[in-house]
Image 1 (cartoon, one colour):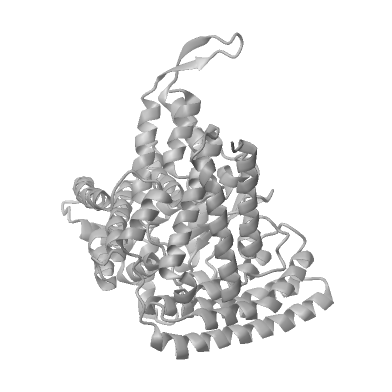
Image 2 (cartoon, rainbow, N blue to C red):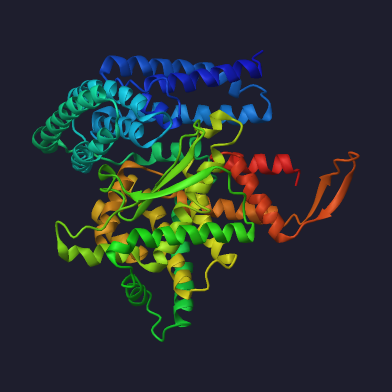
Length: 565
């Protein structure tokens, strides 16, 4: 009979094998013994890795069918589901033959992480960076060999990423070279930088001149795989059809609520007209970052004053320009979290700078995405109490395995939930902020419909853009960037609204248990304790975040199993 110890050893072995084969992922997680390596994605190495994964999957099966303790059984089901989905995706689509972005994103991030994460002295990180730079050429060569006929949009995105990577090497890396105090390292890093720029440039030529003309593949993953990911990776209780209904019903109900809210402040309750008016209320371009900093500070201050959730000690957050190589898919802002295994929990709040180049006439269009009400909401979503608070909390859960799980329904559901919860608790009395919160909820509802229909062939790229513009009230230039991202990330866009819906349901279940039976620690007897809503709300938030970013099905099991509610 298999024992819990045997399962834990297998689980840890699988994680270690993942770090060994994906050194960039290891660095991102805070495991630094592979910091001098890069991924090996030649055909023989990938075939060997797939065989190992299949063997791990076979070894997992008896544990998942057995009688493991509560926590181990959750870990087993999560791990088995993730492996099943990964194998199905590889077997059906072979991403290494259709994802040109992988062969440049990995080199970029393996460099970027060693620069911005201050887990060791700069000179130590530069030594590993030099070794990585020596090896990125082989990874790029694997891409040239493996790629066949990717979707055109994938190749176009890879071209933009590669161009951004070259800019990183030319303009960001010299800043760290100047900071290095070891002249020999500086000289060698400069030499390797020039060589890497040449290799990136050669890959860019390959993408433009060779791969793009033959990029006629399809990005859609289809109904069968989409359903499998919903059931075995997200563990969601809804079918695709039910989710489309949720999205469409939310669009209709939120539109009604929006009209009602707008009618309170304007005789014209036309949603589009009023939101368009609000979008023109944005800060001066040069004050954009200061405005985001101000709103992040105010959000954190409010959480502390209202005691809504525990903020982990030692966390910190820097508001920085979005890296060059990410600006193709991040029109407004995003979050990049700290490593789960590192002591320093410093996150990065990315804000995409609005440049007057190359087209001055696009300046106002871009700035409309950074209106004052929008910035306040984005600060809640990306920083406090959204992603940054969630990641720094999750990164301190006792289970290292659960620190590595990033269920998007949990992560994005929490951030979207926070937008509404903060306003419920009185964070802002600005009516326009409430209107923008509802407008952004429309956008997330539209995402559900687009995500599903885009990947099951019911909606084309242009139709998806139009749907976001017409139903989600996005600017067209940013709607195009959004849909571009959706082609790469099936089921992630729907995670926002569906995750929020599940969290709200869990919260109401928890808050409804106002008369809670608790153990009296002094004598072991039970007594009934009446808890106020504010106490229960903070307790729910802390319990939710203490589970780690695992699929919501298991979060609910953990919260209500341990609380005995």
